Image 1 (tube, rainbow, N blue to C red):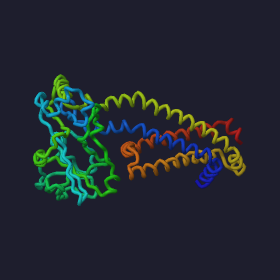
Image 2 (image 1 turned 60 degrees about the vertical axis):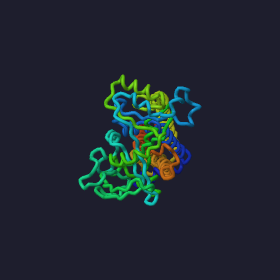
Image 3 (image 1 turned 90 degrees about the horizontal axis):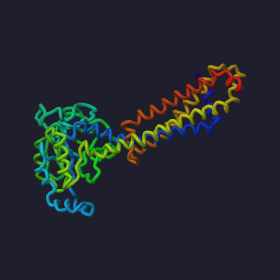
Image 4 (image 1 turned 180 degrees about the horizontal axis):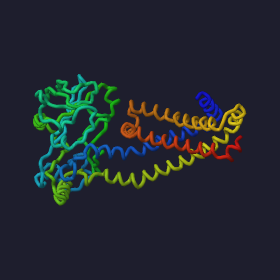
Length: 399
């Protein structure tokens, strides 16, 4: 083992330039893949969270804003006085709801109150316990069930929450701890091209922990009815339907578009973005992977022939083909591992300071992506090493 590591270190230090080039090549490939995977990751995450929100039972409606007059047609401008009047024309309509956000700046706590109709449709990854849809309005102990972001909380623990405006003073019982990354429902999204990935935001643990913020989620009907009286008139609305037929979905969408923008699984801009990724980004990623793999193999071959002097010296000292093979392969493996360092350091810094939007991609898929990249390159290194060291002519030309 010592001889193998000694040979590997000699190979690396006598070929510093090529070693650095290989490491930088792999680091670039990692960043490039993560960057391009971000848009798809956002779509997949939002689709998972909102997997129960189909066009037959859910829609997101954003009314026309006063500051958007210049972008709207005359027929839409006339209806701005009551953007919700069109709800009366909807078929299979169950009602319009909101997600309410309450804050306590003293304890750095945020309480997100979800309507029951929405919480039942969400698929939320949990670290411990269960999501709100598994409980009724009250727990067995008579408290309002809630899910928390804090990992040091215990299931069954009670939390006394009072918001800054005095609208809410309740006792909550922890029934679950959310997994990382956390989600946040945004109801301030508007525009002509709405997407599920725009209304479901991801928040990572480092962002919350560094400020000591605790996020709580609940879906108490009692709280919803109490907060509904203070709704802002220009807020977006979550619309729920009773398994509307395809024709009803089409007519409802046309009706809602008269006074604002509408988002459901049929109209989501994510559908366009996903097609763009498959047609544009994916071929680009695969092309770079293939070019990088060929470049890596060629670099290893050059690397091998530049090691001729070292192999000759070790052969003269009694080194056999097996030692030289493992020494060369170990040097390639060490270079591959060293390329992880700049990637890991930057991602840790980015995670703490939120420098890149695609930091979330690393949280959800980064480990798998990096494992795939480095796994493939380790196999390539092993394969090239085997071909070179067990090819008689190549060995003779070096020795």
